[in-house]
Length: 356
Image (cartoon, helix red, strand yellow):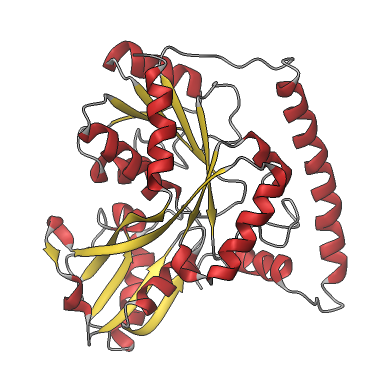
């Protein structure tokens, strides 16, 4: 559990149904901050709703992919699927992303997208309006996919899509920092569609409960459901091996993502022999010391492969992993719809027709 003791402690606080009496004062403080945060979010959204804070419209279809919780909901595979689909249909497509914890032009999600989607234009700029204008002016983009855009209201969008993780849909129902919510669930009234990700990691009854809860907020919400389907395993220097190569092997897994349990569950669903795991904070910046520690733990537990996510692989592959005897590998996944795929395509096509 290296590098994330504070985050693990916070997660334990906000997810435990019954708190130890020693932790109750801390929870009370978190609730007070959560109330102030709720007020700030309410005022900000109200100012946008009454047009005191202005939105800027650009001459291209803008599709926002976002969420209402902190941590990983599977937005990046969703963005990759959307881009791949429309690029394959000859639509000039660009991704607008703010970047994260990087002094370079591309890191984390932007780097994943650049590698996962052939011919996609990735514009990294915290100012999404400026990024959109650049993509249109310099690249003649017709479809702009705004990654993590639900809370970024300054850029007007034609379609608002929200990803909800089936494993932790709304957390404990509280806003940050007393819970996982970035804004109240009622904010889903701004969304045009909800895509329930990792739908295979929860029961059909829970999926139905999520839909019912969202439908009470917006009765005409468009729904879809998807899973993260493993496709192959990637080694250093872009060498690929089939998934069955991991069968009957001892696997050590690590990641630094918002929902590490979902990644580990994916490996378990593949019936792999997991001998050890390590978690880091979301968007963790790896060092050679981190990688050496992972390797030593994996070697001690006699692992035959060290497996991580593509997002973590982007960063660790740049470090000294070739010298180790145990291969470091990335589990590659893609979004696979189980329901509602055509609904999403129809929404985006209608947006594109406005600018044809």
